[in-house]
Length: 570
Figure 1 (cartoon, rainbow, N blue to C red):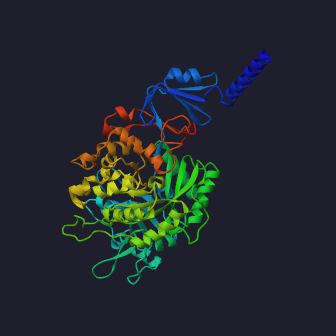
Figure 2: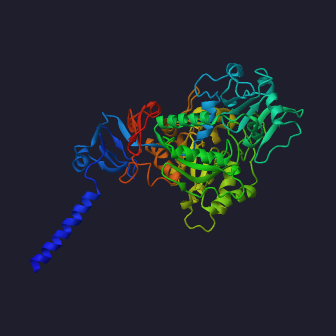
Figure 3: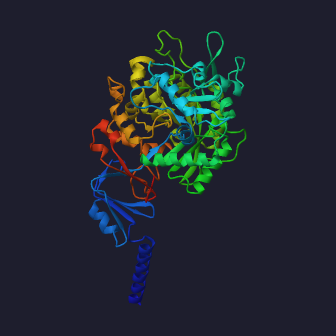
C-alpha cells in the first residue's frame, strides 16, 4: 500500500513536470549572439546573448547559458558579427501627424546644417515650390528659423512673402512650431484684419508701430483662421505621409513613439479615428502612445477613456501649452531676454494660472497623465505650482508621472521641486546642439544658457529625465541625443560646450532614450530595457555607443529595428 502511494505521488510529480515543460516551449524562436548586448537594466549589464520566444525576451546572459537552455533545431541564430544589440529607442515627444504634414506634404525649409539660410535663399525655395501649387491651393511650408538665419534674427514679413506671390496664399510655420508667417493674400482669405482681436490661448496677430499687421503670428491659436481656409490634403495622401513618417522614425531605431498632440492639426475625433484605423490595418510600424491636445477636446468629451488601447496604440495623456519658443523670444521668462539689447521682453504665458489649472484638473481627475509644454522659467513656475495643487494630499505623487515638456530655461529650485513632485522633464536636447551658441551668445546669456536641459542637475537630485526631438522641431535621431546629452557641444563654430557641469555619462544619456522615456509613458514594464518578460523591441547598431567617442555616437549607423521579435522594414 505504501509503495502504491509513493508511486502515485511520483506519477503526479511527473505529470506536473511534464505539464510545465509543455506549457513553456523548449526552444527560442531567435537567439542573438556575437556582439555586445546592452541590457539597460538597473545594473547596466552588458551580456553576450539574448533569446526571443513569441515576441518576448525569454533569456539574457552568456552565450553558453542561453544556447544550452533555449537553442533547438528550429531556433534562428543571428550572429551580430560584432555589432551592438540594445533596447529599441523610445521617443516620448513627437508630433507624428505634424511631421507628416510639414515634411511629407508641405515644403520642408528646415536646415540643420551649415551654412544658414538667408531671406533670399528662403524666398528662392518658396518660388520653386510656387510653380507646383494647384489653382485654389496654398503654399504651406515649415522650418523657417530666424535664430538660424543669416543675418541673425532676420525674419519674414507679409511684404517679403508678397515678393513670392500676391495671388497665392502663403502660410509658413517657424521651426519652433510657435510662430507663423503669412502674406497679405492669406490674411485676406483668413479674414484677419487690424481690428481682429487676438485669440485666447496666447495667440497674437503681430502689428508694427503704426498698427499694421506684419504677417507674423504668435502661438498656435493664431494659426487657426489660416488652417481653416487651407484645403485639407486628400485622405490617401495624408495616410501615405504618416506611414512614411513612422517608417522614418523606425529607421532611426525607434520602436515606441509618442504622438504628443492628437487633435492639433485637425478635429480631435478625426485624428483619433485615423490612428485607430491605422493601428487596425497594420499601418503603424511602431508603437504609439498618444496624448490628446487639451484645447482641442470638446466640452464633455467621453470618446476615449484613459489608457484605452493596446500595446500597439494606446491613448494615455492630455497635453497643454503654457508658453512659446525660447529661440523665438516668446517663451515666458522671469527676467527679460538678452536680445535685443535693453529689451523688456520676457515673453508671455498663454494662460492665467487658474485658467490653466482648471483645464488640467478636469482630465487629471479622470485619470489622464498630464503633460505641459513649458520652455521658460516663468512657465515652469506656473506649471509646477499647478502640479503641486493637483497633487495635494497625494502620498505618492510619482505615481501620476506628470510631465513638463522642454524645461528649457530653469533654476536649481525648480529642479528640486520637480523631483519632489515626481515630475519627469522631457528635454529637447537639440536645443544644446542647434541653438546652443545662439542662447549663450545672444538670446539669454551664458548663465541661463548653461542650465538649458539640466540633465546632471536632475540626476544629482535623484530624478529621472528623458530626451526627445519634438519632431518636426528637430530631427528624430536618438543617437544624436546621446551625443548631445553627454557632450553638450553646440554646432556653430567656434564650437563650445554649453554648460559643462550639465553633461552626463553616456549610460545616463542612453537611459534617457530608453528606460526613462519608457517610464515617462507608463511603458517601462514592457519596453525600454532588455529583460526577461519584456517585449522583444530591439535595435542593432553598427557600433557600441558605450565605447564610441561621445561626439561620434551620433554617426553610428542603425542597422536593424525589431518590434515584438520581428524585423521591421523601411
